[in-house]
Amino acid sequence: MMPRPTDPCPCGRLAPAGPGGSKGKAAPVLPYADCCGRFIDHWDTQPAPDAECLMRSRYTAFVRERADYLLATWHPSHRPPALDFDAAAQWLGLEVRGHWVQDADHAEVEFVARHRLGGRAVRLHERSRFVREGGRWYYVDGDMPPVR
Image (cartoon, rainbow, N blue to C red; front, side):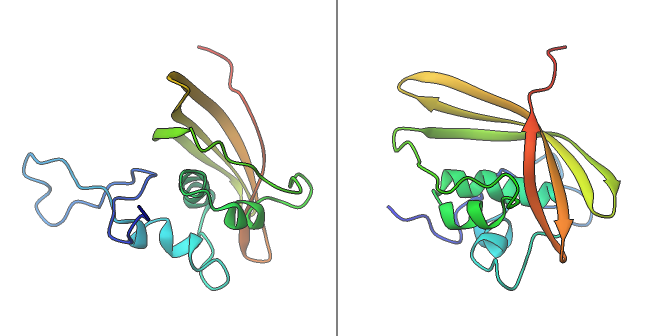
């Protein structure tokens, strides 16, 4: 079944608490259209405003198998010629551990993305580098942080 714009965004970003807070209730996950969908579905007119939003939208693009967006947001210096998706992958969630701005055009985001493949849990922990060129953020590359 095709995901709907009103479905919760796969990146898991929570809606901001309204006036008075959430009164003991957990904040809902933003709908796809109000979160990563506005960048993925409107790449030409609405680029991600910062590296964290780009990283979240790239995770969502992996979940939704949007190779067009992933390739468009990959810096040309490191962009692969094509992407293949494993249809058996079941994405389980994203945790953003940190977002660091080096200067106006360089930032890093540390995250953990989890998925299940062939009944086996897989955990990708990366500290990714991003660069802004021409007003758009691009994923450059990333490293696995040392285990603490």
